[in-house]
Amino acid sequence: MKFAIVSKGDERSEQIKATIKQYLTDFQLEYDQNEPDLVISVGGDGTFLEAFHTYVQRLKETAFIGIHTGHLGFYADWVPDEVEKLIIEIAKTPFQIVEYPLLEVIIRGKSGGIEDRFLALNEATIKTSDGSVVFDVEIKGEHFETFRGDGLCISTPSGSTAYNKALGGGIIHPSIDAIQLTEMASINNRVFRTIGSPLILPKHHTCLLKPVVDRSFLIAIDHFTTNYANVKSIQCRVAEERIRFARFRQFPFWKRVRESFVADDNN
Ligand code: NAP
Ligand code: MN
Image 1 (cartoon, rainbow, N blue to C red):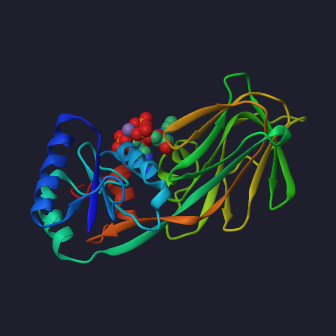
Image 2 (image 1 turned 90 degrees about the vertical axis):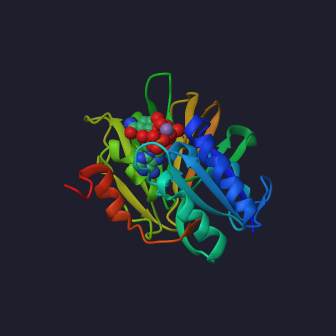
């Protein structure tokens, strides 16, 4: 088996990276940054997002695992103290795979210009540095509302505990194939009216955002933001591709949610 390690880059993460690399090589596993079967992220959830986007072209062939060197992570669920145990597990046992859904975003430009396709592990957000955004929101080919406000967030189930949560979105279990659309400060009055609640869309229910007022948009895919001008539409749906996690033990999602946001198990 071939493996790669993505580290946050701080001293502690680099040290753990070096240890894992050494031990796994001793166990006859091959370090291969180009075509790994297993990608180990050492850092935080932000590091995991980076690892995901580094290997996004190889999702079918690659499994991911995260070790957190900061506070408890959603994607990084092993702690540095467990590294040796984890190394033995990786070297000796065939691992189980758990899959989570992803978000597909297609950005189309006016006059057939750009067409960019992205996969997001957490979410896509659309904002502008230029006043408010105004979008016609279509769901499954039908006009749903005209949104005017600071922006929109479209998240995956595993991203529902990130930005989406701060916007008042619900937490969705990652075994559910869905995306969630949440509003950022919509303007609601007699002229503009939006639903106001987060919307949860199942697989195959595409959400299409069409700019009404021409602006340049700040479109963020997870941790990475790009400025787009002349946008015709932004299409969002549950992706066909999925992320695969290497699982060596149970760590139920709701337990993770509780430990992050409510209390750890000693309370
Ligand atoms: P960051 O500013 O370090 O991330 C913000 C926080 O979100 C960090 O504590 C990060 O954990 C955590 N996080 C990331 N993914 C998560 C998930 N799926 N569930 C729960 N918490 C999660 O920036 P970053 O590390 O590059 O992460 C980018 C993410 O930040 C974006 O995808 C977005 O979800 C989030 N964000 C949140 C807000 C907000 O809540 N108002 C605003 C902007 C962006 P680590 O410290 O372990 O990295
Ligand atoms: Mn971070």
